[in-house]
Length: 382
Ligand code: SF4
Ligand code: SF4
Image (cartoon, rainbow, N blue to C red; front, side, top):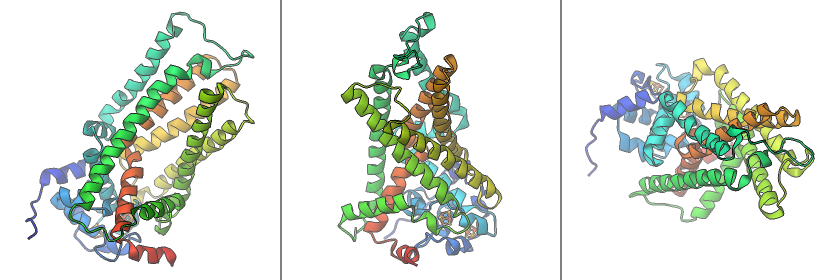
């Protein structure tokens, strides 16, 4: 027999605080479920999630793949006759899920609260300033330059140990947090559930294809434009990962250090990816602003990630342009600011909205294994 449901008003209040302030307006008309193109025919969303949220049914929400199958397109919010903003409510629940699954939970709470913004940035700022202090730059040591007297960041802050150690530590921390979070979420999703498809690797492969093509985004109606921005950012990150790998190969294997000529493959891929990143983010911001009245502008938690990614792109380009312009201290300051933004992005990835990559992918794989999304496939094919 099912356990009796117990409302948890404290949890409902947490959803409201996390950005779901409109949730009490819902009167269960189901318009949102009808307009949502990502909602499967059996047990569709988000009407039922609005009810769970009003009652604070934490377990029903957290063990529910639909929270992540929602791609926050805002169609439901635009059509809701009560202004209950179901898209924003689901976004708030996702925020709380990240807090629940990604350890340590206090970091996700800090990322979601403007009160801790300075503290989150203070850590990498002090870290890199500390490195500069140890290298003697604050006590009159001259900044080394490249062979032709040009600015060379690899000489200013050599990769080993000053860059590689903190960034490898940050990457290891993020991977461990993601692994623990995704494992806990998967165990919650699969508890007492029959996995109808056993070909889990095929489900993972299909999920990766869905993500690379952004198939689900394309099903959104009013907000189709966001697909372009999201795809640009996704491929920019892939390009920047390739750039970093090639640069690491140059440094670790060939012992060839930056700056590299603008015609080198590492610069070409890096510059194209950087431009794609900035354009993609501006596209996302413009799209959000354009649809703000109908579909909601998003929470502080959403904007934290937007600003950090944009900061990574802009400071990266500034560091390059100011280096080429031989702008001395301004170039070095841009470079250190860029390192701070990249550090913030990676270290807090499991606790910021960036975590959607992992939790949404986990929910998508689960949905395929239980054949939850068969009716969506038909919409995709149509
Ligand atoms: S969120 Fe809005 S559209 Fe959805 S059931 Fe509630 S009132 Fe209706
Ligand atoms: S935001 Fe979009 S995907 Fe999410 S429930 Fe609403 S209509 Fe569906």
